[in-house]
Image (cartoon, rainbow, N blue to C red; front, side, top):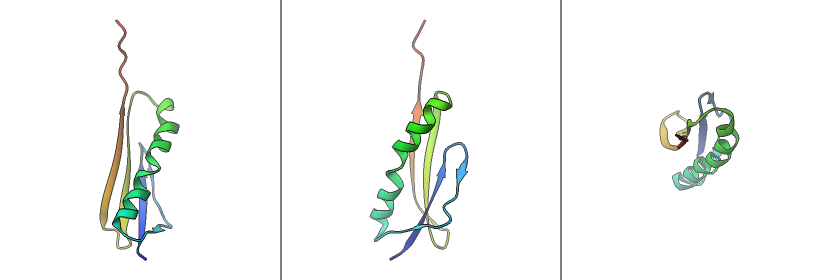
Amino acid sequence: MPRYFFDIHDGGSQHDEAGTECADLAAARMQAVQPLPDIAHEEIPQDGDRRTFTVLVTEENERPVYSATLAYAGLWLLR
């Protein structure tokens, strides 16, 4: 089973050293998408009204194969 690495970029960078075995690219995609809401839930209240959260998926040879991004934008509507 191929191993994929899931690096998280959310204003900083978290490099996945261990990787995760996934049956195929569709499974790797699901592995990338699943943590984004949890990451956003933890980070958004701490740091303003504009944030982008990205998971970059690479193969063992470091070739990128998928990128998932969740963007948040808050806007005050007071006059």
